Image 1 (cartoon, one colour):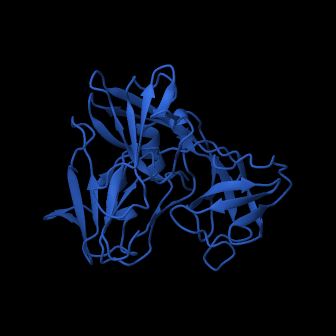
Image 2 (tube, rainbow, N blue to C red; image 1 turned 45 degrees about the horizontal axis):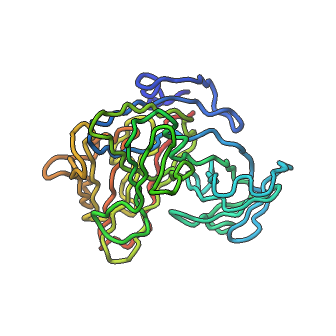
Amino acid sequence: MTSKIFQTFCATTAILFSSTAIAQDATDPVGVITLNVQPGSDAALSAPLHRAADFSGVVSVVDSSSVITVGGTPGWNVDTFASSHYLFVNNGDMEGAFAVVSANSADSVTLSFVSENLNLGQVGGLNVGDRISLIPFWTLGTLYPEDSVPDGTRILLYDRTVVGVNLSSAQSFTYFTGFGWFAGANPGENHPIYPDESYLIRAPASEGIEIALTGSVNVSDFRLALDSVDPGTTQDIRLTSSLPVPVELGSIFGEDGVTDGDRVLFFDNALSGVNKSSSTSAVYFAGFGWFAGATDMNEYMIQPGKGFIYRKNGTNPADVVARVGSPVSE
């Protein structure tokens, strides 16, 4: 039976592929999300839909702490997926986690870990029999292809390894009509966007932007790892819900690992301006949940395709893992 959240998705988002059953080897349902950026303004955005997987299969051997072999004989060309794809875990203890494919052979992949280690072969980690997919990263060039944004549009990206709060962007790319994305003289067309990160897009003063984000709907749960870069120091982490439908704050960040003083900051993309402060902020109180002053925020709806900041309190030592339920379920 189709879940209620998927019914909401169908009602609010254009469905380009209709799926009556979600099987292991079925094509994921596909949709489109439309977002807007005001002229001369920033918008905190993300990619709520992923690109179609180029391979789906099962782990047959855990070769080392960073290498797995898949079942069958896929016969890949060497390094076909290197740096351009990520491995996504479809089930098992690590369902929803991802890692960058740094190299591949004819039937194995070498992984590098971004938000968390997949603990290959260990209890609670990725193991033989787990299903995985190899998915191409969204890049600046595929997420915002030629002529989809006006000349002078900027993308600001943030480094999850930098300590602290109110962090400046680590990289900035500008779109030049007829040429593409650049950071200075360096091309940015192939710069990857991680599936759990959000970013700022800045429209030129002359015109706003209407963005149609098209892609596949994740049929597995998604996993958000909230790591402290420097234990004891409060840390900002720019995230996305990964969902193409609204989802309640309290349903993502519940009691597991969340502690007093953790905060989530949301931004109003309908407001004009750059370097905007958050429009809404919710603080976590153990035993009660999320509040903005006296206002209960547990049912606050995180909107699809919009980025937010999770501000992990310096007194929170936990390796927080938040699980985001798929909008498609049996």
